[in-house]
Image (cartoon, rainbow, N blue to C red; front, side, top):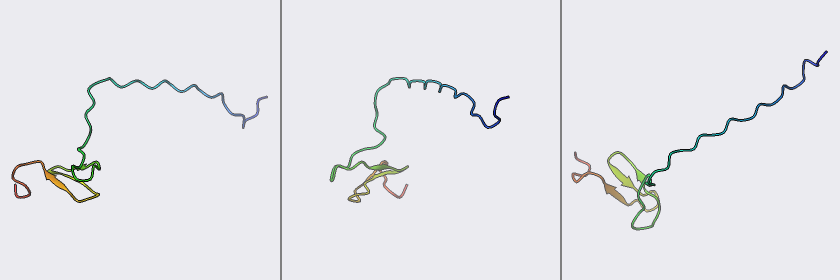
Length: 63
């Protein structure tokens, strides 16, 4: 009789599917003042290192 606590044979992991290749587009911009990656907000790009901000709309804050 087999031991009740015996481990079952391990299953092989299924291979992961490769992503489709396409043109690379960075998620955000780089800061022109210090070179750090800028955070992309709904209305602006903001640098956390030097506090530089670029607004996405021409109207600025007051939409």
